[in-house]
Length: 288
Picture 1 (tube, rainbow, N blue to C red):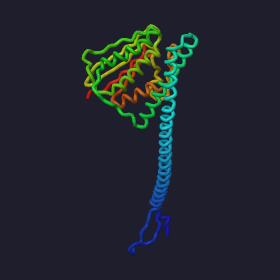
Picture 2 (cartoon, helix red, strand yellow):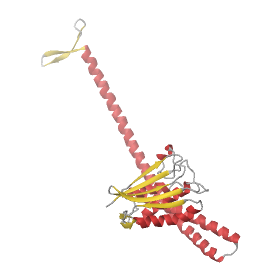
Picture 3 (cartoon, one colour):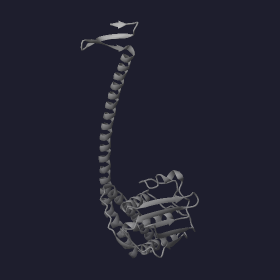
Picture 4 (spheres, rainbow, N blue to C red):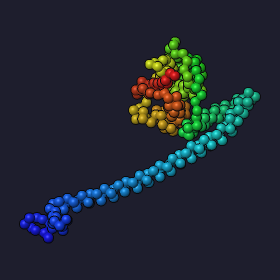
């Protein structure tokens, strides 16, 4: 029974004694029940959303794996006929004397080699993504590797009158790396520097030991890299706002592969650049 003067509600008795609740306490109890019910409903919604997100994530993961497998198969199947085309073009260039036919054969040869390079990059991306690419580490002469990489680039650079020079410390010595993959890193970085640099500039390739690590760097005098491109510069199939000079092509895989190969070596890569002042890529590896 409710007593309006005392603000009490008789709710029954316990142990033979009447118990009473203040009206304010009753309201608080009801509010608590409602809050608990709301939290329970909210938790249920969140759990359902998390379960749905987990399913979608798994589906996307399976789709991504399928894409990687398909990419690898296609790239592998395309490589064989392109290798044949490139080889046939090379053989015919030694036999054909007609300049017009030679021009066509050179075009076939250069296009085939360009496509082969792209396919090799696609195969590398597929292997890295699937975790099947393994490093073959061994002691490697760093100065010799830099010299070979620079020598192979000078011919291409000479067409733009770009000077490619070495800056290798005398005590750089050897390092335990995968020589083929390290050469791939250098070729990509030096090739990019030449590709994006204007005529009559300089590209420097350096190596040194610093605080228990091997550091390699490539510096150019190109246009530099815009701030908005820095966050995506190492992403796959992403091209920055800068464009190669002399009509050179870019498929947006080179730096992505470099980053992943560096990661496999437990290394790090850093980019320093200012617009109009060129770019410097620095790769560092722990010396085991």
